Length: 502
Image (cartoon, rainbow, N blue to C red; front, side):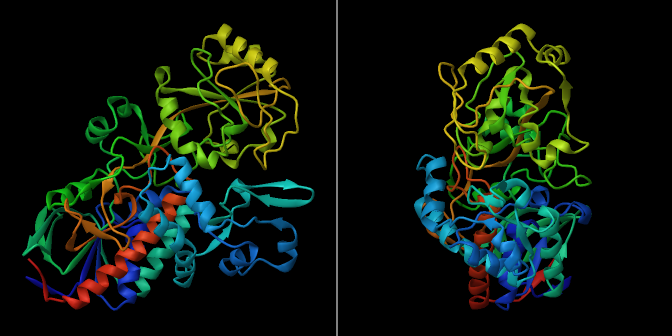
């Protein structure tokens, strides 16, 4: 029997979990982090993110506080529009069709910038998102879409810096330790059961923060809650998000909350790994320049309005539209006019690409209905309306007379060479979760807190429905991770008990 003194146990080791652990430790609580995977696969889905993080801010001065290395000379050459809390909230409500829990949404938005500052204070480094969220115009870099910030070195850098801080603060981490059951006594958290090296251990504690993700990596749960067709989806992130945290919470009375039939999914390279490859991190397989493309399925037909909005507001729902297509595949088509505007991931050696000097030759390279493929492109070209093409804004340069339309960024596909990038659906995280309040306490069916139980990250239900604004998932993990860790520390220190590992 080993004597321990952990006030708080955090389940998971991604962004939300480590933010919770750090927040709890800075309040004086002793903290143990449990990670199901081995050390070389730590970080959860956060390891695979490109690091874009959505926060409200009042212009460039706020951004320079987060990135003090921006020089006056650099500042003169960039334009970063104000992105207010009202705009953030409205974007969240717009893309979720008003379904996001107003209290949880407001907390996410109003705490976003403060949480970014807090993260910076703990050594997390940020940089301008030049690569994916800006275009050059009139000699300036114009940032767009409310997403100018990203973590340095993407999710890899975020997880590295968070773990460095965990070590500095003396937080203990147990790898290859799988949490399986929560134990209550007198309706309060008493202990957690884990499996470690083939043995079952019960760890007594005062408070637990669950931050171990959704169920997107479990085929059975995907099929049960989202639909059987989701068995064909690629799992973009960690293989360890199999819903066990949700199962444990529901077993002790947590209220199921949010859209269990929904998920974040994207168009990803058709030949991407079937689960996240920790040797190739950084979200390198996504294909997110599709608003500048037209997308055709193997029957040679378009199926979405590629230019309905900036990719920030459509990419998380268009993955499921690709999944619905024959053989779960679509082809993003570009010509040489647009090719220079494509994001960096299109130039990586991992990208699957077909190239030809004519559209007929391109069609011959693809397993598609060639006649319909060429007919669709011809009809699209005839429908393109005149106007000023401007990828930095919704330019209104659309089509007329075709279904679906293309509302913005419509250029005729007519200048060779021509390119096709095959994509399929990659699932990122499930939207269904458990109900927490605005400080991260897990609520039961009567919407009362379960004493000593907190949750954060992708386990929080009720914020995202159908879709989400890009970068808000990472921000939600940070905000609710910090809140849950802080709340858990306050609870634990008020109810501190001796803890024993059996």
